[in-house]
Length: 152
Length: 144
Image 1 (spheres, rainbow over the protein chains, first blue to last red):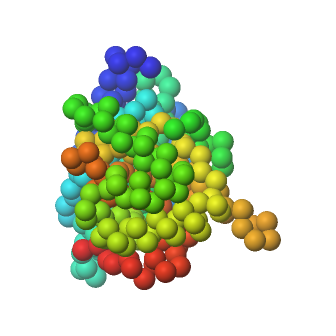
Image 2: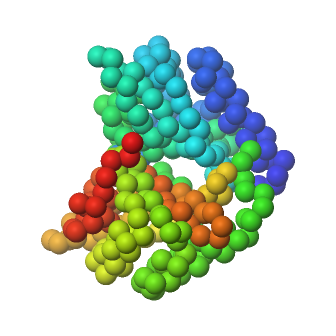
Image 3: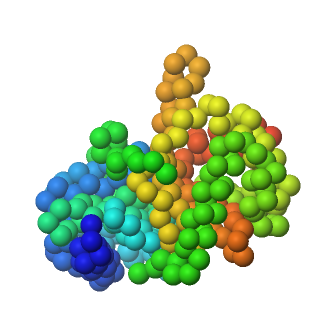
């Protein structure tokens, strides 16, 4: 991947993040490939397809976003695989308690200048808050869906 | 977007040296690459291991007990964040009775002044109980 190609994909990832922040489902979905994959780690599960991505955001925006009181970006990076961001998020859960969650989200680059999805490292607890009942539909991750293995 | 513009080569070289000495189980060499007060943070379980002596004990445990049990395969290439070098890795443990356990870990290693200040590790509690198990688990304290 040359620098120009990578920058275009970084711009798509940033547009995706901005649309998420704005609660704009159509623009968010529009940054994704036709068959996006959401990989959930370390639980090792996956959700596939535009329909599930849409249902995720339809739950995420009205249910999770209002609970997320604040967040702090701890680090971020870019590779040929995608854009990674490490956050600490404070969530006001039902009942009023403020919970701290540490999350990594890697927006993965796909084909045709779009994103292939996202790889998320987070606790089962916050994934449950983010995905709601859709999390029950997540399937076990198979090795073929992991990124390519290369030497260090 | 964030990469480390200065000192990249040094950080990559530092990480490579660390990888080599950890692979050899050379505890003194590992400790020489760490700052005086290293902190290992374990997420999402929210526990940490702090202090050079505790970290030395951890590496003794890790190199003698854990490494022989785990086969590690890097996932993708190492990456540079705004303050650290990181990597993702798949780990497999072939346990008793041919039970195969698979884990994924993402590690971010921060450095200052030519030494690592610790790590932020993202993995399952199952992997952490293996890596930081035995006498090390009781040394872990909550992250505030």
